[in-house]
Image (cartoon, rainbow, N blue to C red; front, side, top):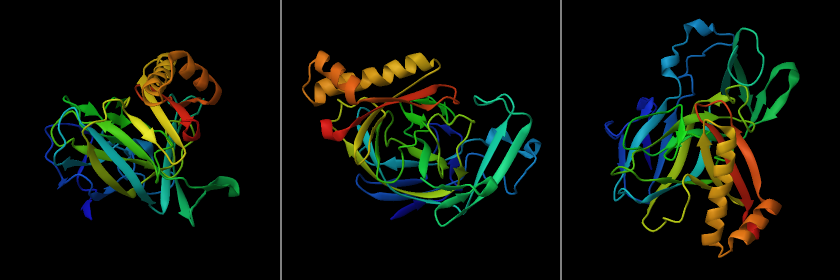
Length: 289
């Protein structure tokens, strides 16, 4: 299995970046990632003024996939996420949805699959990828979500899930990072439990998958459509409409049937409200398909 170490990081999805590694379709790769603060919070209570926020949201990569050509779809199966032994958070005034005074950079130990939070609160981990994407034609910040993927912050992107992404440039140039030990829907305080991690994925090129509304996510039990927009209202409608269109094609349903089914079994959720574009998802159990 090939490996990309965390020395190969970037803060943009940029087609000008040289590949850190090259594979053929169907190969497995391990990405070593840094946390979203570039591992700058090395002690509990770190002074925020000492952090360089230009180093926010590093991704590891890019990975060049042979035979991946513009118009194809990249299938990325998340096989395993191995988190570091501590997670970090930084909440501060003016960010997120809460009224927080000052700035608080914290570091929390992770033992036996559990976060040891304050006041003896123990939180089971559910590792996930926050940023994953292929490279668009023009450079795109790792802090923003889009059609290419990017800063999605969807908690379903853990081991056992699969994400489908568009190929826009030769080789796709896949990068990922910003892993979380756990995150609630919305990521409402600006961050999840941010971690460095080793992420193992299997990457395949699909030549005939133009019916997928990208980015598209599949878990063991559900399928998920996504959308991002500065307006949460627009993002929610887009996520739902993407699933509505997909069901008509994939399940041979009429527009009315697809709408009725989604109103009964579809779950429209806010994935994050803190990135430059807010994110929503529409989730449908596979058993109804």
